[in-house]
Length: 119
Image (cartoon, rainbow, N blue to C red; front, top):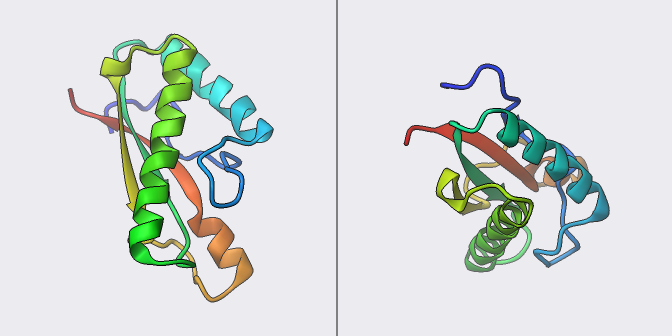
């Protein structure tokens, strides 16, 4: 992955208010840890991916996930991370990791992931 020393993957606890791209206070705390990690490894570029569950239309979920990914990117930039190191995409409901028929599954599918990317 190009960055074994940085924690990558699902950012557990980075959540948003319902039907919104507004970060929760818990999410801000976790993103502050991401800022520290990105500051520690300044040559790493990352992609921020936001995922939704399947409730609502796929078009709505796609748009919501794009706004959420951008919200995370904007937060990282506001804390001093160079925007040239960041890229954000909304995945919508396209890549579930759990069953959308259960509350627990939907909660797992609503997630933000961060991945190292090649420059």
